Every structure is written in C-alpha cells, then in structure tokens.
Length: 328
Image 1 (cartoon, rainbow, N blue to C red):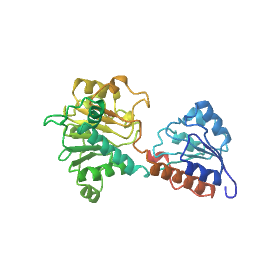
Image 2 (cartoon, one colour):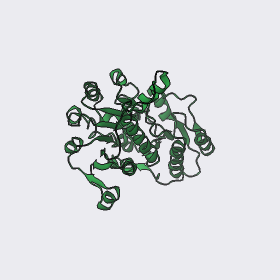
Image 3 (cartoon, rainbow, N blue to C red):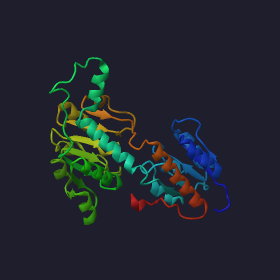
Image 4 (cartoon, helix red, strand yellow):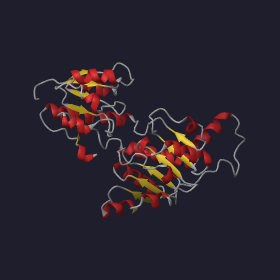
C-alpha cells in the first residue's frame, strides 16, 4: 500500500514518544485514557481501521474478527505474547498479525531473579518489619531466609527469557536444570551449564526453585497442575513471570496454605487482575501487578517494533515480526 497514509487505531495509552512518532507517520486514533477497550469499542475499531494496535488486555477472538471490515489488514500487537489473538482466524480472513518479540527478555529475566531473591530472603517481610516501628534490632536468628547460591533451579521453558534467567542464575551460583518442548543444541546447553530433563515430573520433584518461563498455549494450560505441584519438595519455591494460566492457581494456593510448598513469587495470574483472595493472604508469597517487563526502555522498544512492523507493511513488504499459526 505504498503512498497511502494508513488508518491506525491504538487500544491503550503508549509511551508519549511512541504515540508522537505514530501520529507523524499514520492517520492514528489514540486512546484518551488508560483503560482497556470494551468488546464493543474493539468491534467499532476493527470496522474503521486498516491496522489495529492491541495489547495483551484485548481479546481478539473469532467472533470479534467476524465483524472486521475488509480494510483491516494488519493486527500489530504491542507485546510478544499473542494468546489474546486468534491468529489462525485472522490469517483465514486475510489479516496479518505481528508482535514484538525479544524486547522484554532482559527485563523479565531481571524480575524473575528479583522474585527469587525476594521470596528466599524474605524481602517483603523485612521491609514491613523495618517500616512498622516494631523492629527490636538485629538478632542472630531473626529474619533468616535461604541462600540462593547452590540451589537447583528448574526452568520450565528455555526460550529467550528462560535462557536469560539461566545466565543470571548461574552468576548467583545456582545449578541450572530445564525442561523444554525441544532440547537445546549442545553448544547452548554447555554455555548455560544446563541439564536437560525430558520428564517434567522428574525435574520438578528434585528442584529447589521452579521458574515458569514458557508461553501460554493449549498444551501449557495448567501444565503445573495439582498433581505436578504435589511433586515439588515442601521446601521448594515456584516463580512465575510468564503466564498465569500455566499454573493451577487454586491448587497452588491450597498447597501454600498447607505448607506443602515453601513459597511463591508471582507476577501473573490465572484470571488476570482477579487474584485469589486466599493467595493474597499468604505471608510466604510475593505478588506483583504484571510488571516484569515494565521498564521505560522496554516499553519504548516495544513501540519501536510496532512502528517498524506497520511501516514495513505500509511500504508493501512483509512485517519483520510476522506471526504465523505454525509458530504457536
């Protein structure tokens, strides 16, 4: 579509520098506030736009796509995960889907390590005690946590983020183990000093820390179900900075309350922002509001990728971050 100024609808507020550049390049409609669009607003957007820029909070399913006009040709997702989009249906309707892979790898890996340290060293409890005014002073047996070095880390999902977590954890002296859909090449395994487990059951039963770093797909839904969670050691902890749906949240909550798992650090939840109230009440849990990738640098880089995908498409070429159903 060279020469044509495409109409673009953005569903959420983006960093100002990204919105400014988008306005310069395209006929863009920006979001006035930072609330998610309703399904009715999304339905309206896909009837008027050449390109839709949604985020993970927007459900772009088959019924919604059935309402799209013929002019909608690209869904340029602001985010790496596309489980919010029915990619197969979009492609059947001649609508391309792009995403922003790789941008948030380091930020998410950093947060994974922060959660590990926070849970094992009881950081939130320490903060609360210091700020309470009731701290009696240092004592040899007070606020004892666990040393992170020497622990066995089991990484579920050894893609970009899983590997970034492994590199960081190695620097902390952890022993790296992993389970993945496909085993890594020997040279990558060797560089990460990582041990592959074909059996997820056998891996989680032997780990001190289990980190969830796989995407949410039909095959990973409740991959860490009640049966598999019960295989974990009672002094182990689980960290999830990937997708909440991978873990059976109710089962995890029951086990944390019963002392069958020592702790958890969670940045994502099975039902979005509707966190199980019993989970919130657990003292051995750190809960974050899906902020693993929330750095200014990362959010701007995500926007730059969206801009490149749209601009490349507008110039009549294949978007560099095109998503195809076979990738999922």
